[in-house]
Image 1 (tube, rainbow, N blue to C red):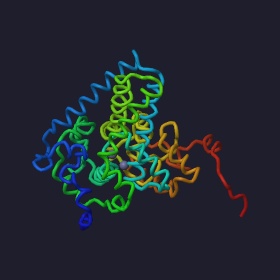
Image 2: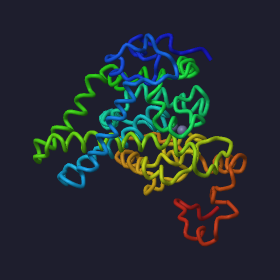
Image 3: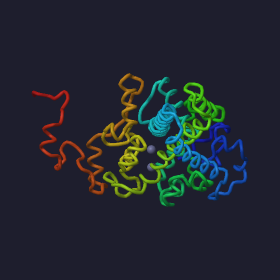
Image 4: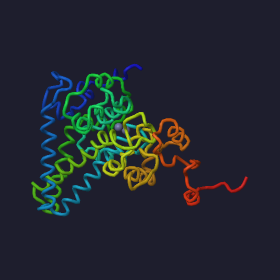
Amino acid sequence: MAPNTSSVPSEVLYEKDDINATPTDTLLQSYTEKQNQGTVVWFRVFRLAYIHISGLYGLYLVFTSALLATINFAFLLHLAGTLGVMSGAHRLWSHQSFKANIPLRVILMLFFSLSCQSSAFSWARNHRIHHKYSETNADPHNAKRGFFFSHCGWVMVHVHPEFKEKAKQIGISDLLADPLVMFQHRYYLWLLPIVVVIPLLLPMYWWGESLSNSWHVVIMLRLTATFNCTFLINSVAHIWGNRPYDKFINPSQNLGVAIAALGEGWHNYHHVFPWDYKAAELGNYSTNITTMFIDFFAWIGWAYDLKTTSPQLIEARVKRTGDGSHDVWGWNDKDLSQEDKLKATIINEKKFG
Ligand SMILES: [Zn+2]
Ligand SMILES: [Zn+2]
């Protein structure tokens, strides 16, 4: 397939030589010119280390001096940021697993921006490469390079040359055609202070929190939590868990990750059926809050064209490549108990004829 980046405006590919670089990096350093793939980028190491150390101090403040309103506010922002990553950058912009009207897209972009995980454009492009070339050198967080690399080590090194090659070929025309995605990408540097400064100042002026508590709890502890909940999907859910849909791939079903990452731990299913808006076979809200979030907006009509997978397709795949750990794949599974069958609800049942 011919590369589709020929029509890409040059300014949107300013980090084309180094996919981990955010626009902030590009401004602060000009290392994209003299990069050396695979080597450590110390600026990013210090940045991530600072966020984690400062976040741990924030955790201490949670138990010592932070106001309850501040803690609740930080938790709400963590939820919003994580939902922005999972339902916006992931299920909407990376996979097009549903469509959203303009107000919902704006909400998702604001939420995603709170997570400070670069632009949705870069995030979605990287993620598409992750899916298409999982566990190869082109995969930005190749889990075959170990837990630490796939968790957060990949953020701290220059990318592999194979990744750069694939980045030139991956389909991104839909992202380029999305004005909101491109706006956030172009003005990420300007938006970043806004999504940091407003949450920082709000607790101080609204309920009298100290600057230190607000910085360490609302910004740093919250970002540490949001970052790691996202990182877990690339590390833990690519190493540990069952593989009921495809035993030949690394991604696995991991309940712990599903809870922490608001429904993104059903990763064996997700890599087999990446277009499914639930990123899981079942829409069980307790372990898939992102699905509940999307379903709510579908209910009020803001999300539509939700794509899912037919039971027949799932069944065929489970039988063909599953590791045998799939409990029940559907209605006619021989292991489906008579009790469950009697309790199941059939909507719009055809009575006659
Ligand atoms: Zn995905
Ligand atoms: Zn994955």
